[in-house]
Image 1 (tube, rainbow, N blue to C red):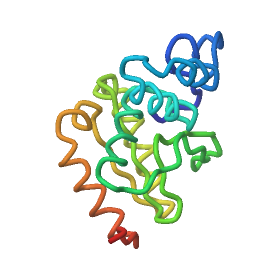
Image 2 (image 1 turned 180 degrees about the horizontal axis):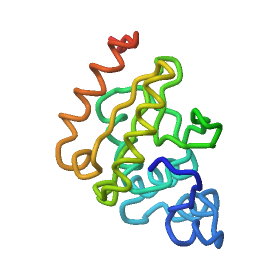
Image 3 (image 1 turned 30 degrees about the vertical axis):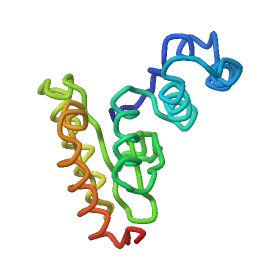
Image 4 (image 1 turned 135 degrees about the vertical axis):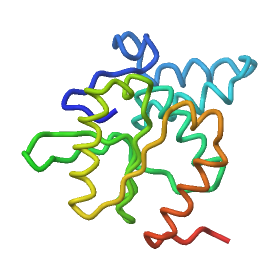
Amino acid sequence: MTSTRRSRRWPPGCQQRRVTPEEIRAVVDALPRTPRRQLIRETVADIAGGAEALSEIDFLRLCRRYGLPRPELQHRRKDAAGRARWLDAYWRKWGVHVEVDGSHHMDVRHWAADMARQNDVWASGDRILRFPAWLVRARPDEVAATLHRALTAAGWRPPR
């Protein structure tokens, strides 16, 4: 999802600026018997915290489920040419970035650009991991194990 321009991919109401995450939260709070209330509250919290795509919300849920620290979302950085770039998730303390890629990243033009951006991150000294969005949903144990290994190798110590 790294790009030079970011478009909001919030739920349509938020994306179109017709409603804010705070307004959705207020409605859910006022309706205590709302079906799937907790799921809605978690999703709104993820949106308010910077998640811009469903795959990023899935990724945050995975981090919570497996006891991983919460990353900074939509981390802005400059590439080697000075252009602004955004990375999906970043653990600044450990220098670990994660990109959650949708299927359009398989297109050869996206793929080549993604590799160039990944090389730029690596050349700056940080680590970058890439996961296809389907893997985050279908095999979260595998993704969490890889994240655990990368964060541990970078100095993170899981709470006991």
